[in-house]
Structure formats: structure tokens, C-alpha cells
Image (cartoon, rainbow, N blue to C red; front, side, top):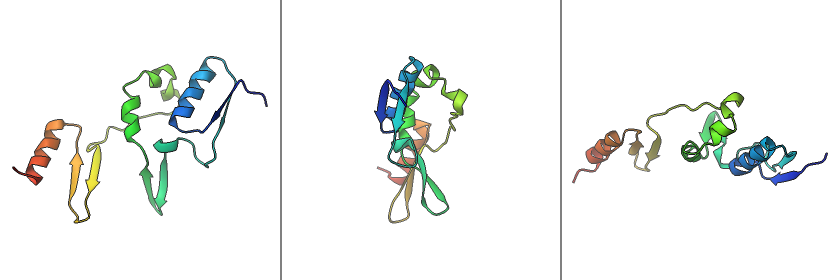
Length: 116
């Protein structure tokens, strides 16, 4: 098969660059060594029965760009779930911190756990 452009790696950046090239009319071949595409923004079952988002924080950044609209990614099933809390940080002693969408809620939790 003939390609105008070959992208090595089907991670987030390689896929976006390839999509823009294809949208511009180029014949693009994307090659990935792993069985799944997406690179750091994939979800994988690392522990049997539990799926882990390996890099969801990258999605926060893409949403600040026009990429989603320019490539029409909703047409292909892209849907964001607005989770709250956004992040969870467990500690070895069993304690944990939650980081919420609402900055005031996160600050209140930090002040409650770590007064003074």
C-alpha cells in the first residue's frame, strides 16, 4: 500500500497529527508496536477485573484546544464524563486526598485534613 506519510507510534500525539494529515487529504499509515492505540491515554486492565486510566490528565489539556471540534471527534464516539473528584491520591497509611472540580471544596478538604 502506498502512503504519503507514515506515522510511527499510535499514541495521542501521533494519532492527532495523523488525523490532521488525513483531513488535509494525505494518505496516512499509522504503525504501532503495541496491541492498543492511544499511548499514555489508554485504559488497560493491569489488575484482573480492574481497568486503569493510564493518562487521563492529558484529556484536560486537549479540551483547551480546538482539536476535538476540528476533527469532529464526537462523530466517532468521543464523550467526556465529568467526574468529581477529578483525582484521588491514596497514601500507604490508608489515608487519601481527593481533588475536586470545585477549588473551594478541595481547599476545605485539605484544611480539614491538615489544619494550621
